[in-house]
Image (cartoon, rainbow, N blue to C red; front, side, top):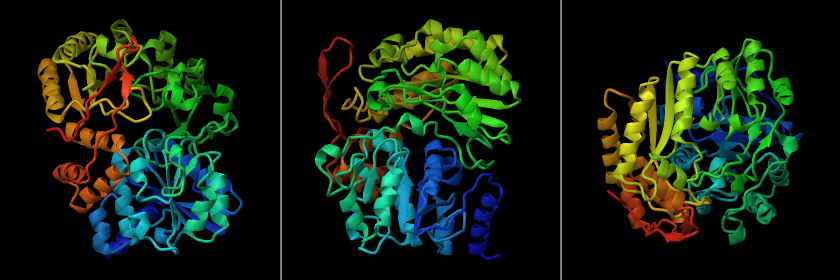
Length: 510
């Protein structure tokens, strides 16, 4: 069988398994692109919401395209990225709109543009090239590394910006004419044209635009056949490491359970409640219990240990929960207080006790290592405390190295160092061997994420250099050095005493 036919047939099979796919003919054709594979992109609530919003515009249509699972197979077959809906080449569309969730997805964007046969660098694309747009969660923190590659950045919540973008594109005149129309519009940044002060100005959608929700249900996602909907948006908390803290998004906005329930289709048997602080919703237990009573399975994106009650955990159990997942986000109480993570050991112990009482299989706890001022003693406290939890219920400890983000109170704090983090992860593994499962993420790639999160456009150019050199960690390290990438340094309060601490500038750490 011809390799090209096999790859195209794979897209047709994905399409055939979908419910809710949209089809439309319109003058303005938008390719909505996700720089990660289909199973990741179709789990993104924002991506699905923008897909529906484009179709609601009378003069525009959208088709979706994703980074191939097997990029080499597509290169060998000489196939460009194609859309799911009609298997059309993405490069033939008027607008290519990328949704970028986090820093390391920038290389997926490079790959998709390369497969399209389009120059990756903005300055190398001609006037007849399609308009390249990017938005997504990354714009809440630091979109600067995207600037060398993108014509228009949509910054923040995009619901009210999408119609403005589409109208500007419909007027035509080529890429530069469209950019000129948008360069001074709040919520947009056109690199090379917009004023410097617009770099970190993000938009906020009006309450009438809520809630975001799934358009297409598919079994081929991280959250198999699950209808996603947000009962709340934003967060009322102030965790110092988090981009979605209350000062970034204006606090938490809730949606009444009646409105949420009215938007869930009858055929959706699995429902995911998505948001930065879902368990802070004042009627969350009622909503989960109503869904469970209707025979639906419910997943929830963020459980806060200090909000767990017997009634809430009982509702989760009735809705099919097998695992209780909470975040500690600090190896010790000292670290949790440092980052304003308002959880105590007793609250986390209570979470484990509730999980055992309602016969859940295990407790999963997310944590950070490498926070400012952290020492081995903090790691030892995490070992002691996790051991106590494991005596109550089986524990899985998910551990991520801390990478400071722009637009947060810990902006400018240094990366702890690859060797330091690897030593602390090994200390955790040894201390918890036979007691709890430790699932860490890579210290090396966390450093790459940190550099992209803390650098400007030169960080994006370094990413392009590393990608062209094969994408190995050594290529990234060399590219950051050759581009002179220096992480942002700022004075920030970290100990709760209003005493500013100036973090030293750090480069590649081994």
